Image (cartoon, rainbow, N blue to C red):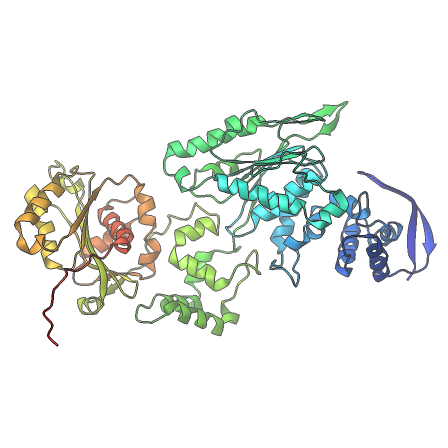
Length: 611
């Protein structure tokens, strides 16, 4: 094969101008050896092949060969061929200059990248190289490496080439911001970048600390927590004063930001009224754009239908890149796959000594029939994903499917019932009584809330058992008090009584304490009484038990749980649309509190022992 070499070559941002001359054949191996002689960093065959691959993508294979030969004496150094390719190709930059992060090697633990990561880099190229748009939101599952693939990679690339003079990164917590700065600083100091771009980090002459990095090329990277104001922030250097040219907002919301409408609005308002207004418009001269507008990138996972992430998603100014962990209907797939249904039965079998290990063994025995594609096959394990789905579907839909629209469509699909004999044969470690009181005097009795009672236990097999469940109405306050006392007497192993404070503001608990003090059988049991206001959103509380009920980790007593109470559970579709939610609310309180019961020390007995 003949190969052409290029002479009189000029590589700039727009074109290659050259003349062609025919020379003898030269192999990639020869290039490796010649390049390696002049480089402090050892050049590998894979590096040469990578450079050739992306040169071919930018131009064509023939021109790629020509360029390699023309620049064989400076492939990787300052002003070299790799430097020019990296400016035009973010994937090449990441795979060569950040290769210890993104390439699988014998001496690292990197995972094989999947199509998703290359699609992300294609989006960033469109945004920063082709300048097709200024704002994009990336909605991706937990664990998809969005912080590394987007935040770190883009920041390092844009500052190596001074494309961004001042980058502002925002995370939820201060710790997140500090970690990002540390990771970025380490990336900028790797040998591949220093070989081409020189030492960009200089602690003696520049500001380099846990919050910011000022580089030797007069650019700056600064990280903030979401609670910190960025209003009016700028970077002043010897070359000028710069407002942020790139904002990256990475997972800036948490559960606390969606509890109330006010919390949601606070985050949304901060972005539109503070962060977005901190950017610059594009600059045009004689009809030609000479400076890009400030770029805004938002990364995250939606937590509710009207949270910050979904608000930005609906903003017509933002391009949306949205991927779920799988590209099919996970509910339909799991429900109609007999192997995964068997897996579920094994996983939640309370009679097995180690049901999780047995379920995993079943998966590997049938892996050819159960394995499915994910957006990152080297990262996500099918059996782990499905276990997460079974254990907490609501969380899985949010965190992994990035879907908040279908979370509430089905709350409770099934329940597990056992006889008194089966349930009472267990060894119970913790037992509590949870009471959700209601008002006594209500003109419309049919619309009045019910009193809900749950007597439940945690067994030594880590399953939870509802040993008695009731929804009742009382005409007199004393009837309610007496019923609580009767339940305490019926179940002698009750260690704690939990009574919601919202209805009677503690008056009922004071009365219960008075009655317990009169009863020698109860007073000696040292029952702890917990009486607190419930300020947390009721739907959020109940969502924590959906998967435990559906998967049979909460088991109901067939004879002692009222059918009406169980019916209320199965009919629940969210607080706003459900007719009743008293029992399911008490059930959630039981499930969340029974695991927190602390065993009380027994009484000390002095024994008269004779030897």
